[in-house]
Length: 99
Length: 99
Length: 99
Image (cartoon, rainbow over all chains, first blue to last red; front, side, top):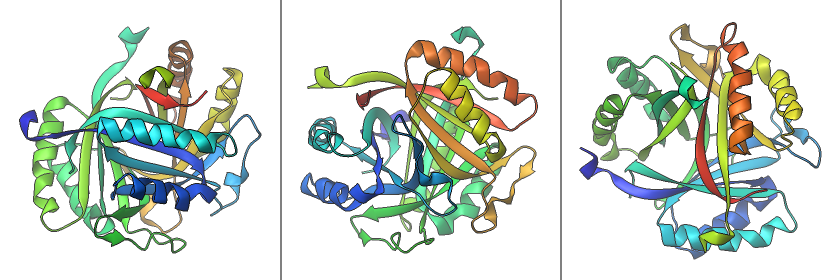
């Protein structure tokens, strides 16, 4: 049955919430129209963030499924943000129901 | 040590929050009793959703770990919702601590 | 381009929110300084949780990217919580931008 499933690359970006609009514009520039965003609390080597205040989340987790080529470009384009903001990104192969 | 870890298929379903009860019933029908749901904001080709209103999330992300056979059936059963609702689903192999 | 991407093990822990501080201390003990936490609603074989009350989440999803060796130790150390709390954990190989 797997023949009927799409293959793609799930890219997960976890970064400061202040980057949200820039990340969406970057996806748009790459022709990516579908994504999901979840507010997240972060902890890291620069000290725990404010995530333990109810309703206050400094980070977001953005997920999108793209082609391998677009994931290459996306990860490359994300490097610029790492110099000035807390951001990680990673990719995995997935199969399922998506365009 | 990996010998002591369980192997399974992580299925992630991202869709409109209005589908939540139907998805839970579908899981129940397939004999899946454990799942996790996270409210999510979606953006897609049909326009950005209302996710930027604080506390308002139109999407959910539902995760469950099942056997390969159940993941086949689950993905098949989810196709019906794609005609009328925004929904994607994907699966990945995982190992770890779970039943 | 993949040559410039880091390789790591994404560990996802989903458990009762009451475990949050203990999980963070466990990560700290293992030398893991970076993690992300997302509030989650759980459903399981012990009955549906209170996740459908707005703003009330009994579970958390904690993600961290570590080495294979640390993921072995982390999963081993997590087993103690399964006797008394709802908790699952799983790992996957990822590549991307992270330390």
